[in-house]
Image 1 (tube, rainbow, N blue to C red):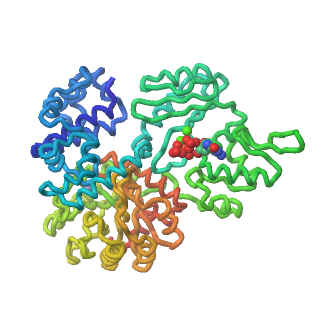
Image 2 (cartoon, rainbow, N blue to C red):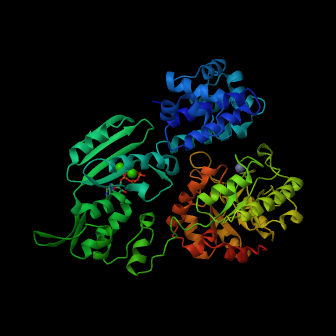
Image 3 (cartoon, rainbow, N blue to C red):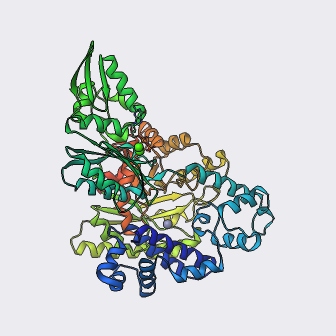
Length: 582
Ligand code: DGT
Ligand code: CA
Ligand code: CA
Ligand code: ZN
């Protein structure tokens, strides 16, 4: 059966081929469908099996022509149309398009001029300094390609949390639903909500492990069984994920949960505390040791375990041994922001630029996600490829927002749409819209989308200059990194945090799983400096509101409380802070 991911991937590849051919509009249509399918809860194959091609067409955004291709893929594992595109240009499109700095046009050029088909060909040509000889490429772009290739290699093997979480949660649920399973929970770095994870560690309680282990190693998506035992099994899935399952008896559940949640550094620190107290801590429990005798002290729950060690309960996201144990000992742990605490979203794109839906649709979907206010922040004209807004169009958009608010209000909906922008910071730190416009907006977010390779001093000065503009409220995705794809630009974050404090600028925690920007370390610094943050979805489509949880996770890993993250505040309080008129 074709997985949603495999369907999405082939559609992305088609889009990329069409881009290379310079076909207008169509690539975006394929991309949109691919995005939709990636986000579906149900399996497309099942949808198709139940309702045929009609059911596929009922999925929003899918027309007959793409529906037929999906049908063909489900039935035959192939799409002829794709095979033909591939024949015309037999390159490894899916891996090449992940190389930073390689657009569709360059892929075409590299193939036609140098016969480059694979990442291997690309690396060889770059090392032999052949790429710089091509028109449109230079020494710089050649270096960039080599750098990006190294980066791809280094980061391979780890998975971005938000990309694999739906698959992980599906598996945990299926194990949970087996007979005689009392509990099933994910542990390890996934439970700590680390931005990337190496593998998945699942823990279950049961008195009857054998049938559960048998189920686990025979799940349809398993491609390899690396261990199959009574208490531990390990598998590899089609998606490449490695998953471990451990089954423990009820009495040591807390201790096992604690042990397998880690981190390793946190565990080691806990064990040292136990030793100092004349006790022993392992995955079976905490034991009092006297001579050869060991008596069970705690371990049924994590709460009881931490208590017995003389510590406050420590939330998984904080367990990295970066100061949480000392705070827990002094009863000074922060009261972390909770997953249900967000009331607003301060970065939302619409179909006025590169988002998929209208202002009204995004607002209505935000209500469904439990939000009470959103800020519409479409791109500005410097980002031409997104159809960025100029002065005239953003004024039009403001009128449209007024209309939407009126309509929602008349229906008694509890939702306020605020006027904003994701305004480009130009090379010199000036902004892509004039102050006369910015001053009319409720919330001005600014971001760097160009000149990533300025020197540290220049980049820092550039962003500080943007912060100096009194209309600017927020710096969006402040370091610009895209995990496994693009490193952060070189910038003095400590200085930016100090300057944010001086200028009352908010720094964003962009929740897109591949951004997670700010990262936990910088969030800690903002908390310490009293710099406020906002956790935004950077939504380009309604389902992106669901990823806000990864932003909250990052905030929790950074020890942030509600007071630190302004969109956990009610609108009235945000209005006051940002001086938004009623
Ligand atoms: P990952 O998978 O690389 O993202 O990171 P983790 O933290 O999930 O690490 P993993 O899967 O190797 O092990 C899961 C947990 O098991 C880990 O967080 C702590 C515990 N653990 C594993 N090996 C050791 C060890 O040698 N000593 C201690 N104290 N704990 C360990
Ligand atoms: Ca793990
Ligand atoms: Ca593991
Ligand atoms: Zn965008």
